[in-house]
Amino acid sequence: MAKEQSRVSYQVMWNRLISVVEEQAQALVRTAFSTSVREAGDLSAGVYDTQGRMLAQAVTGTPGHVNAMADAVAHFIRRIGRQNMYEGDVYVTNDPWEGTGHLHDITMVTPSFHKGVLVGFFACTAHIVDIGGRGFGADAASVYEEGLYLPIMKFAERGDVDETLVRIVRGNVREPDQLIGDMYALTTCNEIGHRRLVEMMTEFDLDDLQGIAEFILENSRRATLERIAALPRTSASGEMTVDGFDVPITLKVRITVKEDRIISDFAGTSMVDKKGINCPLVYTKAYACYALKVAIAPEIPNNHASLLPFEIEAPENTIVNALHPAPVALRHIVGHFVPDTVFNAFDKIVPGLVPAEGAGCLCNFQVSLRPRTDAPAPAHARRSEVLTFNSGGSGARPEFDGLNATAFPSGVMTMPIEATEHAGPVIIWRKELRPDSGGAGKTRGGLGQYMEVGAMEGHEFDIQAMFDRGDHPARGSRGGLDGAPTTIAQDDGTPMRVKGKQFVPHGRKVVMAFPGGAGYGDPSERDTALVKRDLARGYISAETAARDYGLSQEDISTVQIAVRKGEVV
Image: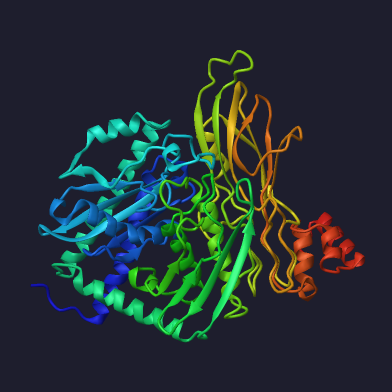
């Protein structure tokens, strides 16, 4: 029999579990093959009880992954069956509706046994560069075109990997070594989590996790409900329109605060799109919950109980509740706009708390490089798939400026140029902050960035653009001005679309400007010292300083002289 634990012991164990899953996530970062994991941190990791309830999540990772994965483990339990679970098992899926929203995320779940008894599960998710099909992009008309589908199944049973599954995977993807390497990395990170859990259970003389699970879930539930109970009992609606693929799409939500829960109803949102920007409900739920949680209870650890009071509803076959077989490869574009839509409504319930709109979705693109076909290619030319994660600016906050070139709400990191160029014969000719892209306000929107990409001599490429905000830039809040829109073209001026697969001939570059975040509050109320600082740093031009902030020509000249002299402004 395990000894009875005190509240202090349970608190120590809770903190220990969080450190266990963070080590689990860091192991994945260190061992993953895909740059999206190693460099951008596009992953999640967590530990679950025997009922599939998430007890703790890693700090490293994205809300879309971890909050979607919070629901996924229950699907694994149902599909595999407890009677078919053994020590040494590893389960896998990339099911968009029972995993994390699209085929490019591999989720692995490992049952954790202690003294021969199932005590819980470890799960992790990683975005992989290629899953076959059309490739990562919005061009497909159904999920069947988007790549290889892996239903919930065993990757390994009692320690033996299913080699038939491995051969099927290798035969259907463009980067087989990379993908199989990532699958083994996911497996390994779960194993590390399991080892650390067993060490903790041995140290605290635990036979199971039931006691610590109830302690975590009850305290998290109570703390979250206290925050909700302090809110006004009211409802408010919010909406936003974004580019979509061929036609704009509108997201609508009505937030209703009850005594013990908050309901987000997305009725009125645009219907399913013909192209792959649709979002399964599991991913919509992940980001809607995240938005509300960071607004009212950011310091309460993320787990099953702290997410439970947030109820998400959406009519079937809307773009935020796309049903099979809708194409969903770029579900993150719509999903990443969900928080700003929620904030648009929540700002009417609790004013002065949430930020202005930001770039929203990531500014990702993938290049498919190959030897040139318009002339003989050099012997060294080769095929390669290179995915790069980039960010626009985040929206200004009520008391602070928005963050430059920072992904919100996803939280993933921008990939370094060196890592991108190491992945294939691609050249990043330019990557720098974009002045004047952050919307003016009492607090300024974060800056977007410029990028130029091309291929090494002897190569041509297709670029999969995964952008938005071309026609619908981030909107200012409470008198703040809009952020700058996205632009994309070839270096000879040939216009390009913000989404879709597009050919770039040998010798051409793609020139991109990523969007800025919107401003918050009247620009005339901005501290003059901050305007001078932004001008000195090159965040804004002299024209913007004068037009939007009313800075005098004398002050502008003083700042410019100080900059030339190397003085600090």
